[in-house]
Length: 501
Image 1 (cartoon, helix red, strand yellow):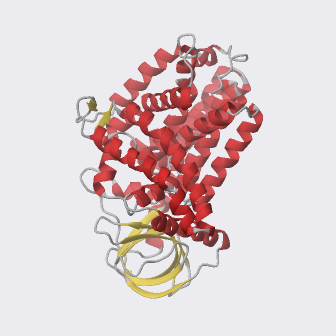
Image 2: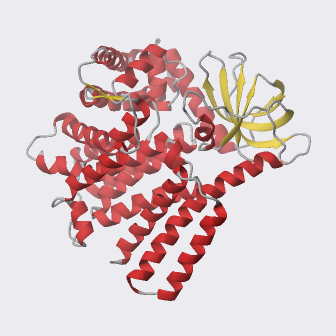
Image 3: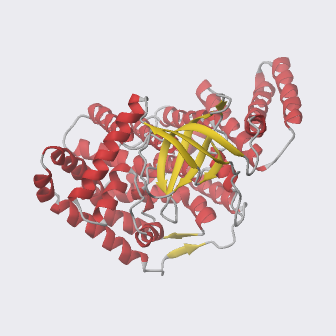
């Protein structure tokens, strides 16, 4: 086993340990005890398969310990701050995210929390619900007084742990507002200012619902989209167009790379331009942890195609996932977005080259072949997670993405151009925005029409844990036959390269 392969195995062992600890509760002292035994065996054997096996077991246990320690630390932090259900407290914080609740009130996430009475820092974040008026701006500093609530689970959904995966441990409903001040965080302030300016400009340029769709497509702001439209996007598997996800950015990364190559730009320059494009895009939208993770996933897809050699690309992606889980082990079980992002990238790495190889004789007209291969590769990789969490997946989602995604890219590019023009001339921006308006109208109406077709929907109404591992065991078995994965397993992948988009 080479060092590269050993590194991959150890990263996989850590991820397996986090997964084990997420579903199987074991007393932390017992995990540490077994870890000590594994460490002793490693130092006793030092070399050979016994030492490697001991090291793998040690890393698995370390992954399980990491999530158990996180749970214990979070519970201890809540008790240390004396937070109890219904207790009244005055806190200071920064508005990290401003969304819209189901009743149209403001749902605000505060971070950088501090107890106003003691001045001590409070770990984690809090969701605060406020009336829809007056409207607040992201990054503003606020002082509030109200009753602390602990998130409650509902309908079999572990809502408390889902919020914990985002670092949110408390909620507060309609507190008293003591003061609101502008932020001193210049980077956050500039980012929020650009985003708010672009959002308001879109509302002046486009009518509804086009302005809401535009804000969602390029800024990730979904608050103004109607429930009917969101449901249609959900049903057709195109919701990723309205959210900043690894699935979305990964596909955009491949399409951007392909477009640059089709323009005759050299491959290395196309890679750097695509990378810069992804970084700038993530900086413009709200820089939440989920959008940053999505940007990392998109960059990793580009790195995979840049490196070409599968072992190096696979190591980079698995290491990135391990690093994210080391920082936040809750992600693996409780953050579906992380799961889908990671699986989408793996699908683009392992399944996309298969399609690219077998469809090499077909011309890529307007990027349609690339979109088809990227979409179906990601869908195959993420299928069991989508079924397990949402109960159904539309087979027509591939058709939906092929019909809509090329225009979504055009809308995003055109949208940024219109915003730039609108900064200097609102009238000229409105005149030039008509083609963009027409494309958005086409997207919305197409998705609404396809969402009414129920003939090709895969339903899974009785979720079972065994379904997910069984699916991936079969998928891996199919991919191993004379493919890149088989080459890795046999250690003969040194000269294998990932087909370029």
